[in-house]
Each structure stands twice: as structure tokens, then as C-alpha cells.
Amino acid sequence: MKAAQDIILKPIITEKSMDFLPLGKYTFKVAKDANKLEIAKAVEELFDVQVEKVHTMNCRGRVKRVGRYVGKTADWKKAIVTVSKDPKPGKDGKKRKSTIEFFDGMY
Image 1: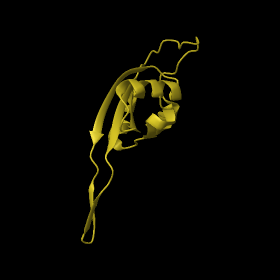
Image 2: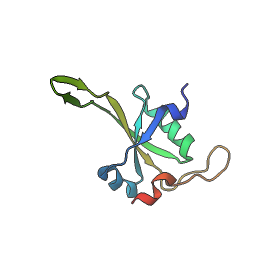
Image 3: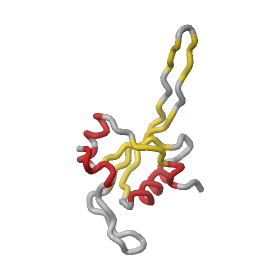
């Protein structure tokens, strides 16, 4: 099993992803071979929240040109994670958070 840091690579911060924050939806770049269950467990472990849904999509890399040479950026995977507004306590009995603190000051 992979570590949570190997599954969640980085947050995606765009205008569209910031519009989803009040709805409790957070966008991340994730490992290409990760599935929805692994992504949900990784987000719960890293940010101490309860995940309701995970939507994933494979994004194609862009074609780039430098003079006569054509190349392509790497393909990647994006996940939109919906966090529960009223989370249940965790397995250890601690209260979970209803938002991810990293994104709190952005909207």
C-alpha cells in the first residue's frame, strides 16, 4: 500500500476549483494509478476530515512546440473530493474537521 503523500500530490488552485470550496469540494492532483478508495483514505488521513464522494478524471497532457520540435507534457489525474459538512467522530473518538485548513483563507 502506498503512503498518503504518494497518492495526493498537490492541490489544484484555479478559479473554478475555488468556486467549489463553499460546497465542500476540494480539487487535488493525484497519482495516476490511484483509485477512488485510496484517494478517500489518503485525504481522510492527511487532513482529518470525513470524505463523502470522490470524482476522478484523467487529464491529457498538452502538446507543446519549441520551434520545429513537438513534445507533450505528461498525462495526469485529477480528483474532486467532497467533504462531509457534519462529520462523525473518527475511530479514535476525536472530532473530525468539516473543512481542510489549507484552503480556508482562499475564498
